[in-house]
Image (cartoon, rainbow, N blue to C red):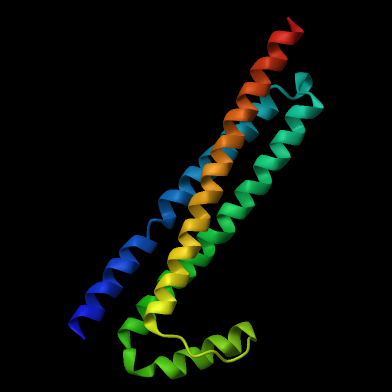
Length: 145
């Protein structure tokens, strides 16, 4: 029981890193939005298309951050009453309208870590798009000179 409690605490602490991922995601899209507004008159269609892709990757990243946040809270609830695991599963089935599945704690942890990894991949893609966006703006400005 002690071992499971320690593992659960470590998983919850790891899942709380969604905040860092979300903050970096929001920073890049706000920066890109401010830059696009500042140079909107000279922005090309390529810049706007790249901004749209950046916006999509932001939404992808934020969705998985939200899912990770939700799992983090669910684990905290489940840890406060581990003996009510079956009742917890039934409540989630009621909320999300899914078929019943028996899950072990380890399955839950692995699923939550996968969500965090997807959020991280989304953040990496978003920052790649952000730097491409900046490069395209710089390239567009050089061509117009």
